[in-house]
Image (cartoon, rainbow, N blue to C red):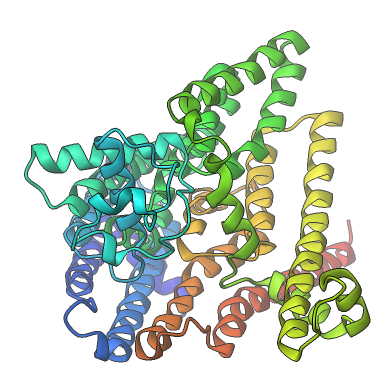
Length: 510
């Protein structure tokens, strides 16, 4: 029996299959919740092996459930039952990890640090945690678990408000500080699942495809487990595009502004909403919407302006120094670094009068290669971005085209960036649920490789093995070749297959 026939058979009992798949997944998430390194950092290799086995099993269960959805055409009542099962599963999976101590990332402790400062009336942008002025706030539970203690906060005001709210919620309901903060992010993530049901319905696709986000291990582990904020940003972005498709530009701008106040790159979508409003309404109305965007930002930053340039100093350090799990950027950097002549490095990066040591030359070569590589990747991204913007200006977009624009911009931004943390892809993941049924919305040859990357990106956590054993943050060389190689290989195969099918179609006599 072929896989297609097998899943077609399962499709006859799709809701039962969903229930069984969800039940087994819930048990696996319970096992996953027991993993950690707090009590046994010397067993990190064993912990990671268990982690990757569980992740692989969860993805197989998710793919099986998705194939069952694809093979089934339920009636209205069964569809509602399926949506309920998907949402209940999403809730249970996240609850399973809610009480877990974060071990894949410790960013949540920086959130709690900022919340503590705000609660005591201290501007979180004014001083880095290691500053002498904040010595009185250092405790034994939060401060030791933070990294980058010499860097000012990089988190925008909307997130700062949520951090403070999570701290107060923990105090009111007598929860652990981490749990109270994660609870807010999980609630927002579950709201995103409901909003995604609405988006799929709006573009006339089966709402059950939301399972590709609702049961996806990435948001569950990164939000409920590690306590990352990216689900908040994804919620604002999906809400913005829903209002954009409904031509409700006022609400689209408001949600986009909050998206910017969750992560700054959301501003990339402002010109597109501006153009859509201009073509649909008037230039004056579009200008008023842009002014509303700026007004929301100004009001949000007003309580923190006393920090001055320190509002952005943490972000500048991040953009200058951070580099991790880069895909295409690493290939460009490797080529530039290898081809840079010593004379150019000396003339551009080493001041006259300095002793030109091997160490200085090596360090400055890396710095110059980073600058040039960022310029190249930035140029490629701007080419893609301006081309999309020009198309929107010349001809406008259908609903499907707007969704494609969001996918392409997010994909290009992440794939060309020098840093791709696994949780960044949460912003992109909801749009990858827009699968194809009887019509083309977004090319599957683009959707499928990106969705695969959201699975293989977990391999980047292999860096933790060496880090906890030696204290050196060094990515294993093979990881990125596998992590990016699998999606790229599938993309090449699908593109080639599509070209062959197109050629065969042309040969069919009319």
